[in-house]
Structure formats: C-alpha cells, structure tokens
Image (cartoon, rainbow, N blue to C red):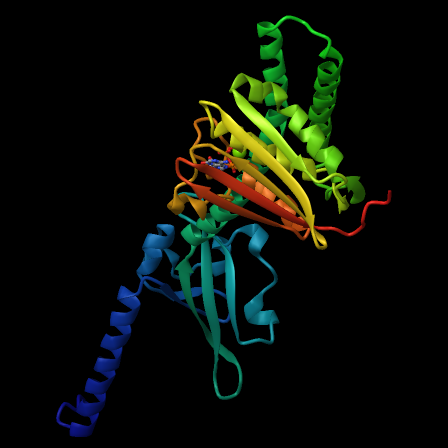
Length: 362
Ligand SMILES: Nc1ncnc2c1ncn2[C@@H]1O[C@H](COP(=O)(O)OP(=O)(O)OP(=O)(O)O)[C@@H](O)[C@H]1O
Ligand SMILES: [Mg+2]
C-alpha cells in the first residue's frame, strides 16, 4: 500500500529526487566521463561524456570489463584488487571505438562499506590527448630550434673565412700579380684549414669546446685579423687604420677570440658600402686590455641598439644575425665586456674590454 499521505515520507522522497536531479545534472553535463565500477572492474554506470571521448554509447559499455579498453602496454596489475591505496590519478591510453587510442587522465576512488569491503570504484576521466600532443610538439620544436641555431651558427662560421678568400680572389682578377703573392697564398691556405677545422668541430658538437685557454699575443692576433680583411677592405674602398700599443699584453684566451674581432670588423666594413675608415685601437688600461673598433659607417638607430646580439637579429639581406651574439658569448666566457656606441650617419664604435692575466715577458 502506498503512503502518499505520510508527510515525512513525502519530504524524504522530494529530497531524494532533488539529489538525484543534481547528480544527473552533474554526470550528464560534465565534460569529464564519470564511471562506476564493480569491485571486479565491470562498468556499472558511465556518463554520456564517454561518447565524445571514445565513441561508445554508455549502453554499449555497461557490463563490460573496463581494462579491455585500455592499451595493453599501460596495464599494470589490477589496482582495484591488488593495491592498498584507495585513490589514484593515472594517465593511460584508452581505445576509441574506431580503433585508435586517446590519452586519458583518470582520478579513481574505491568506495568501501563500514566493514572495509570495496563496494564500488568511482572514476572521473578526461581526454588529455591534445595536451599530450602539444607537450610533445613543444619538446620537438625546442630541439629543432636548437639544431637550427647550431646549423646557422656553423654556416656563419664557415662563411666568414670564405668572405676573405673571395675578396682576395676578386683582387687577383683585378690586379696584376706582384711580389706580395706569398703572404696572400699563405693566408688563403690558413683560411681553408680553418674551414676544415670548423667542419671537424661539427662532428664533435656533442662534446664541449676543446679550444684551450693559452697565453696569446694580442698584437699578433689583431695583426692577423686585420690582414684577413685587406682584400675586402680594398674592394670597398675602406681604409683600415691600426693604432696599437706596442707591446700589447699577452692575454689568457681561447683561439676563438679571433672570431670576435673578425665579426666586429666585418660588420664595420659592411656598414660602409661607399667606403670609409675602420680605426682599430688597442691599449692597456691598468689590468685590462681595451680594444676599440671605430667605423664611419651608416650607424645603428637607437631603437635597434638593444636588439643587437639577439640571435638572428639582422638588418642585412644575407646576414644571419649571429655574428655579435657569438662574439658576446665568447667575450663573456673570457670575463670581458662588449659595449656598442653608435650614431646614425656618423658611425659605430665597438669596445671590447678583456682582463689581462699575464703581462708580456720581454
Ligand atoms: N658596425 C656596425 N654598423 C652598423 N650596424 C651594425 C654594425 N654592427 C652591427 N650592426 C647591426 O647589427 C646587426 C647584427 O649584427 P650581427 O653581426 O650580429 O649580424 P649580421 O652582421 O646582420 O649578420 P652576420 O654577422 O651573421 O653575417 C646588423 O644586421 C646591423 O644592423
Ligand atoms: Mg655581422
């Protein structure tokens, strides 16, 4: 016999109905799939969100063994029966009705009765396939940009010696042979050796730089570097003026320090397509070596000054925008500093300051 008239019973029924509605509202509309499993892993309830995630209708899944839908590689024992922990968060692959797998993140909880036996397992699972893929993409593009940076850096290092070789060859084409041929031939050979050196470094990229710190004569280094540019300077009607203290101190440095001056002087010459002067000053100031490379080129606009040295910042058609970045890094390794001053239309001065460790022994 029904008891519709019992007010207490009626109130309970209404309350129950409200809870049921709320439960339905949550489980039917949640983007996350809500599952209830028996202690044996059989699906006894699944919310409609599962349809969007793996293509099955809830009815198709009721009564099925949940682990049958997992990727075999992600199965790792039977958590419901074998694990002592009552809750877990797990990321695994779930099979879609079409046969492919999606990445799922599931929060699960065992529900026990007062005597401690498992009654149900409640799971809330979300499709995280996109998140996993975009994380993978970020990892891959990080690697790619590193490889790109390395490759571009190497191309840059190879192009500098080629530029000076090219300058000489163009000169040969223009002028008659004279007695200074030997020096130029030697320079060309040493440049070719340098290219070879860089290429073999490419093969050892995985290892850290083996370029040793040694006491080197800065006068000799700067002389050598300026000689490299004779051909190019001549071609562009650029005068290179040297104002070096003699003697200059020896500096504890890597061979790569040469590259810094090559990059800076190359920029100076490139800033004067119509010709001009490059003045290279080198002098000792207390326990530092101060080297200034001054040009009378087109200069750098104020708003571009702070972008210089960023990888790939270039205003040149064929520039890689790595020259000064590489230089800054080398100078930093040597505990020195680089400062750039520039005025548009007047010229640019780059100042390199290096600490002197050993004084020249005469
Ligand atoms: N002496 C200079 N005069 C005018 N602009 C300069 C000078 N030195 C550098 N710059 C500016 O700074 C930018 C970056 O120089 P950086 O040497 O790093 O790269 P790049 O010369 O463009 O290319 P790369 O050296 O790789 O061939 C140049 O594109 C140029 O705009
Ligand atoms: Mg440059």
